[in-house]
Length: 401
Ligand SMILES: *Cc1c(COP(=O)(O)O)cnc(C)c1O
Image 1 (tube, helix red, strand yellow):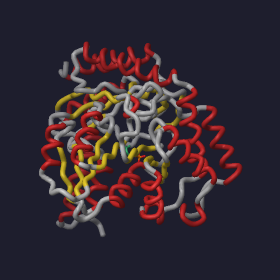
Image 2 (image 1 turned 90 degrees about the vertical axis):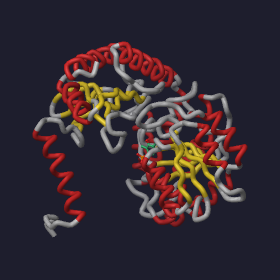
Image 3 (image 1 turned 45 degrees about the horizontal axis):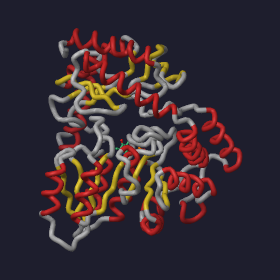
Image 4 (image 1 turned 45 degrees about the vertical axis):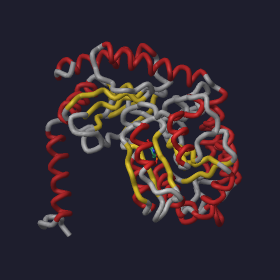
């Protein structure tokens, strides 16, 4: 098939092909660029040029950490490079059990279960727990994997206004009594960098008998004095029923997890399709993730440095005149306006060796296109200052500030 017929699929593909070629012709396309080399935590080589990395989710700069690499190498020597099977049958290794125990301890939970990606974790966990006749309530800015999990579950799907607790409560009040309800939100929102009002969500969930699930993709290693995440940030202990996170961001591996009560975790082990029908995490990745959680606790300076770097970056961009929305974390939206302005900002920044990327519609509302910049504990303050100079110069040239 040549996709040149006049049906809906061909038209969609053609519209996208045209948009991408137009951007490429105007030197405005910066997605999918291969990184040739990682130099230290905060520098990368792209097309032979060294750039400061401001688009990474490696918040604590753990990629390439000697202890983590060593753990990974040892795991390969001992178990090889794959698992040749699903967890339920021949795929479970002592490494998986150790990793799940480490996660449970880190998250102050009774138990934990891992899956092969964060995306898959949300799909399978939400759709295993919830079904027809149940209700899921999801923040409007939640990650796509949460939305997809809710849709896949077949439960009644309600979205509440972003971090708006009155709207959440109002929607809960409209649900008939006696049905199962699950409230889900990102702990730190992946596009805006702001933090969910956890104490209030907990109070509302208790009052209305709803289960609470938090996606901690961007809060583990980022929030809380020791980097344990959203509950530590608010001084609350074990108030979230389903503590979900990824092993691909702060944790320099791949995979996802859920931590919670023993019975819940045991149920997911026997009922979730991604656990039963998809191969286990490879040994090297399980061992890397296990060691990374330990490094976070052994090197608390990383969490502290990330916090200082985040403040420096947000305050600097604000005083240059940028709108960074409500972020208080390492994810810093630099509002640009139109998609074209965000692309132009990216081009200017990358031409001056600052690797940032734009987020445009439909990922964010029209008119709110932005650079979605991140800082990590691997950046030095002087590097952040330089990056801010580059972004500010670009902002003036393009007329954003
Ligand atoms: C990245 C992300 C995921 C998916 O995690 P992967 O490990 O990349 O599959 C899920 N939720 C949120 C909020 C994320 O940012």
